[in-house]
Image 1 (cartoon, rainbow, N blue to C red):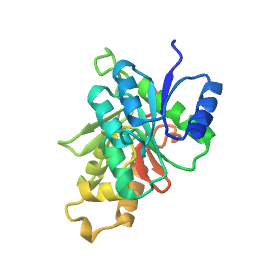
Image 2 (image 1 turned 60 degrees about the vertical axis):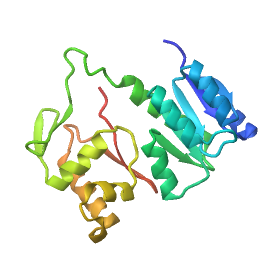
Image 3 (image 1 turned 120 degrees about the vertical axis):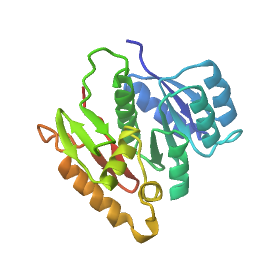
Image 4 (image 1 turned 45 degrees about the horizontal axis):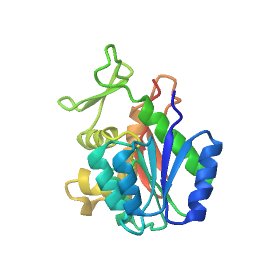
Length: 230
């Protein structure tokens, strides 16, 4: 198996080299780009296995690089930024980022996230693979989820919420995004309503060994669906 290639797009050379060192120590190949336009030119001719992308870049900002890359391929993207406002987090994810890391961050944590995203994206089976056993599937007509062969009935809101998370495994959905897209009038509900429905979903979606948490909380960010291991 070819060693995964990670493209590091970061305008601070010292930080880029620090991340580079940690990734290389973990067995990855790396490519550094310190400008957005340089990254755009390199990505047009190369296909990395994952991109670590800073938001604020000279030449072309990270959101535009992300948008352009998404038009070319589905390469996993982890955005890195010191901007922590909700609108930036939401915009980055809507453009196709797979994860979002706020500076300052631990290089070890970043490497762990890289491993997690690669493990998830590289292990996702092709939908055309014969004999694929869907461990989790949704039925919109009956508002139910089939989990390891067992059918679980959900309420309309629970089904919409789980469908949103399920449609993008690993993607973090902020509470505000959930409020805006799931609830018909989000002005009469709040974060606690989302948390309450997530709690109810977790109780209903119990895996056979009760060891797999399908819905994960990401502190300060929101919620995401974690596909069970094959």
